[in-house]
Amino acid sequence: MSAALIDGKAISEAVRKEWKERADNLKAKGVLPGLAVIIVGDNPASKLYVSNKIKACHEVGLHSEVHDLPEDVSEKMLLKLIEELNQAKKINGILVQLPLPKHIDESKVLEAIKQDKDVDGFHLYNVGALMTGNTVFPPCTPFGVMRMLSYCKVPIAGQNAVIVGRSNIVGKPMAIMLLQEDATVTICTSKTKELEKHTTNADILVVATGRPEMIKAEHVKPGAVVIDVGINRLESGKLVGDVDFEDVKKVASLITPVPGGVGPMTITMLVANTVMAAERDSGNVPTD
Ligand code: NDP
Image 1 (cartoon, rainbow, N blue to C red):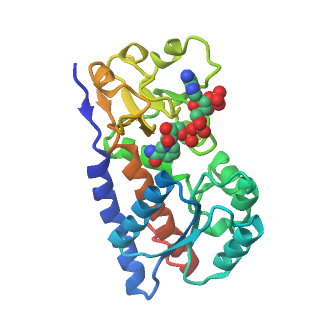
Image 2: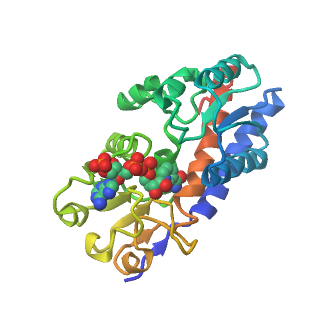
């Protein structure tokens, strides 16, 4: 068997068109959705992520602005900027690119973002809302994975979903979203014994560990759907996921590539969250 590809780039283009239409509807009513991105320091990977996010905003026709702060900016200055953006009328979404330098308290910064503008969904209020099934800002990466699965018509209810990784930004919200759609969910961590005993039980396997190509064919049940969230740059410069793509595609039925899989979907759902925030702020929430 050789798996069919879940083409994140193509799906993302199609999904962005839906959101461009919603943004155009708002613009016709005089509302321009706006995203502010704050980046601290010169981390090349962060710079690249931010420039891709801004590119996506341009593509969909949103207002976007980047606040580029030096590595040694004080926490106080950063919090002051967030407060200004919280008050700014033309800004519907605020995103602070992570990671932040060590001298800045990440959770304090995330809590400072007004919950109605928290397009990344990392504010404690939004984490709680997700937990209780009332989310308005689903975190972009798991939101993107869910959209990909629905786009590919992958059944979720009653399926065994296994997530490898339990970070606050990927693994845990991913588990909650799959549970919400009635999957039977297992979460594996670095402490899990006999990982393959769990992963070979998965109809849907989502991997987010940051360990290059750790998931091999023997970890995967024949016919499973495999979603690789990982993005790792090898010393050679090559970009790979947490799944050994060439090996696993021999047994999976559907698989995401890296690059061109979950990455573009994450950015698309950031655009979606920004447009939805603008719809709510302006009282233009579509009724159907
Ligand atoms: P974290 O480092 O925060 O979390 C990694 C998780 O993987 C931890 O829960 C850890 O377990 C678990 N883990 C590590 N090694 C193993 C192992 N051998 N077996 C089982 N579990 C293991 O990473 P993130 O969730 O932030 O990111 C994961 C990957 O996804 C990275 O490559 C990152 O670059 C990528 N990423 C991609 C995005 C995209 O848009 N495509 C967005 C965000 C992240 P424990 O808790 O026990 O330590």
